[in-house]
Image (cartoon, rainbow, N blue to C red):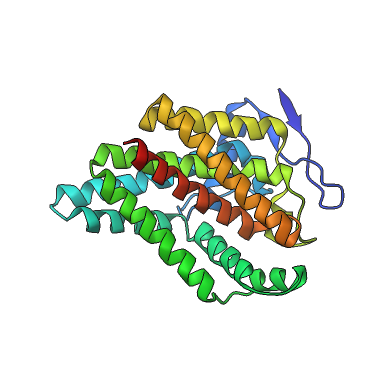
Length: 267
């Protein structure tokens, strides 16, 4: 399997290089880590869609960091609430608040009145409005509450890893199925992944999540993430006609929340 097509904003062609060669996987891994995290790993040049199948791997690393912080906090005798707060804070710091920023901008877009252009301009504004602040506040509160409810460090680790893995694995689906809302911006520069890489991302997410929380919970979590991301994509399609980088960030955050709530319910 060797698909080395490139993306052109003018034509909307796929950009992902799909190959089973170890060197290609390592390149995609570095590209995904460089984009989705603040870890000091030099990222190669290229659109992020080339690393679509490595999206869930970046999520796994962020989830592992949060899990490690939670375990350490519990080991030194901190309360479950404080451990959960530290774990969530760690994931935000390692992830550079990339998706949280998208959620805030998406919420502000939904709260503003006006036409499509007005909504797009609000999403591009670097300032956060009241809707964005509320979205971030409730999002953080739900994450922390879910971890406190789970309690056991092993269960928390499985939930965190699964949420971050599946939340990022569904992004290539949106990038392929939705039109671009703008002719420029981060989403345009990111490109569009190939169909093969999109399915591979889901497969990698399912495999990692199965090790993290069990096959049954992993499958349910992936389905929940797909449904949650689809709902966000439909709102974006109706409001602004497509997706931007902020839409992808919001979809990832909503998928995460849906997964954590689902795991709490299952547990």
